[in-house]
Length: 329
Length: 287
Image (cartoon, rainbow over all chains, first blue to last red):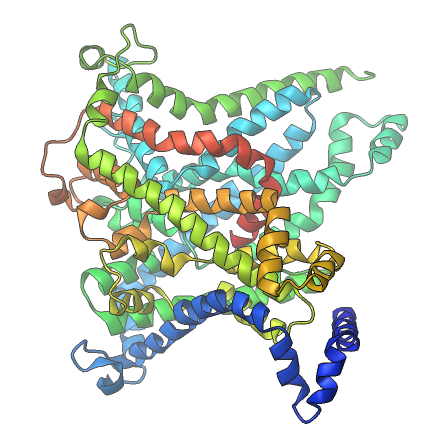
């Protein structure tokens, strides 16, 4: 409401100035046209961006029609045969579907249980550090991996854990123990992904919590100290409640993104030995669509995932608002 | 300090954080020292945690390898050209929609917002890029990734905080909106533009998947794809191992390659650190 008012006011103000004369001259022209003529340079500025979003985010949506066709590159999208929901029916009926679903949920669940609480804990610990220098040093180190690509992270994982040349196994061998093949072990795959995510993002994840903590009134701690509360009790009764709304909203958002698995991460760690636990929706679309050129079928699979994802995010946002939080949009 | 418990807690806290920091730092340390280890020492010892003989051989070899240098220069071009294009497009759009008098600004914002929630998907996007004839062109990594909805929103918020009076006085002097944007608003926003630019640049430097998708020609590969082939494909014969014709390179060389590819990020890291709040906002919502 408020912005609407300022907008009208801004328009009003402009029309009262020099443009007023012009407007009088062309009273027969609609107001919209005059405004647009006045702001033509603004529209020129917006043009490249608008063209970009339309061309790359909206135009390809025509391609989604492929999901309901037997698309053939020779006839193009206009003349390909329509098959309705055939591809979806096929997708839901094959065993691959259950597999993709299980893997996606499994990876996300591990993430939720073991990764999600860590930034919260870590920010609590960081907040209790007395020496600012020490705190900043630790922060600088734990934020760093966030900026590395997944290729580097996967590469480091190989350099440390590969069966032959990995440091971990070389140390085991030197100690006279059996080498362990972590990278091609289907049982270890999800755990390894979770550990990678923790190493890369747990530190970075603290930023948003530390920001919430920074907003706490120092008087609260003082009062608690007067009442004889220990540091741990202060953490529990003051710091943690201050983080509550951020925790809730991030948790809800995380649930909204439960169909998403870090694609590059899984793609890079994928190998034949772990394919049964590593294939997720996005890697499947890539393998079937790009590598096997089954455009229609893979578009259907991708569309299913995108639509479910959209519904979940919208629901999550509604839920967040219900909890009295701001929501994301 | 009233409580012994508090003192104990502070001590444990410092130790726990030290362990976390060491665990996080260790992979960097290991890769760094091994990359400088003499190859013969690496081969003869069971494992290396601190080398006796230092050597630059791995770096010498890598930095005279044509394909590695080409990948580095491809990525440098990608990061510089991509960042400039992205910044120009994002800043122009964000500035336009930040002006309250502009008609249709809300419709444009809605359009931008929706792209965050729902995209056309991998296959339709791939086919568009293919139909535009961008396959095997380095521009296929820039043009389809020019702007992100989040950055438009964040930058719009930033431009809204610049007082309108500045703009009005320039308009009195006869400047049009484009010259106001270019001559007044952008110079004023340099620190903020630098922050967005750094995050875009890191994104372009780390770009991997679109390169796999759109570039088949090894001549065009950015550093990340080169690294993938060197580090991962070579130890993982299940993946398309035919791309690397030579025998797998020595471990020390792999580590040197990791270090070289990380150096540019380490160089901008102190500057990035100044602008974490903005980045965290993007990152945390994006998930």
